[in-house]
Length: 221
Image (cartoon, rainbow, N blue to C red; front, side, top):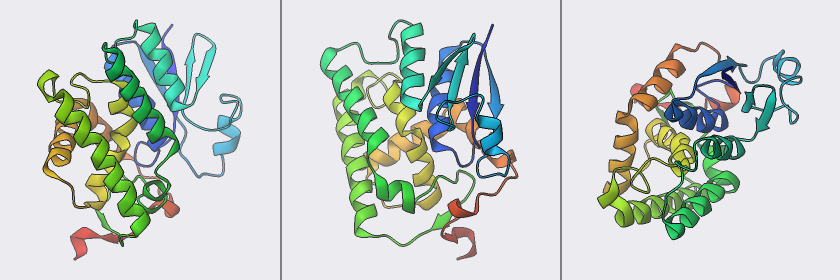
């Protein structure tokens, strides 16, 4: 029996995409149950599937795992740890930045909501710039340390890349100033088939979540 990933919109649900992005790398059979966010029926549809009444949720032969990081850890365990670096210190660093992404960056989340198909201009605040600078510091350190081992944050693809994948999308949407190392990492992610599939699915959606439609259209300037 295949697994089912219960998720929100590709365009808007940054938490869902973290689980989907890693699940697509596993090669395991799965199905998607997409429940669009911010609709009159969302609460009713998600209630019997998620104990927190939130997405994402992974259902594996009747066993339920919720929270994007927990889902990715579960998938990693099913595949004998292939989605964390093998080196103990690199693995600890990858876990540290994944947890930081999971619990921090409030200005980035609120002022740069995920809107994958949009291209917008927003005002830059000190709080938002601080969050962007921190992301850049993380990615720059990771790439400078591990660039000889491959193009991902720790050379090979890891849970850390899945956790930061929505930030790549946010940077594409809002186009903040980024250093060359960060630009190169973003370009690598955007060139992957998995990211491009995600963007295609986001572009095909028709739902609108008004609270995430912030900023001025860059194409109108």
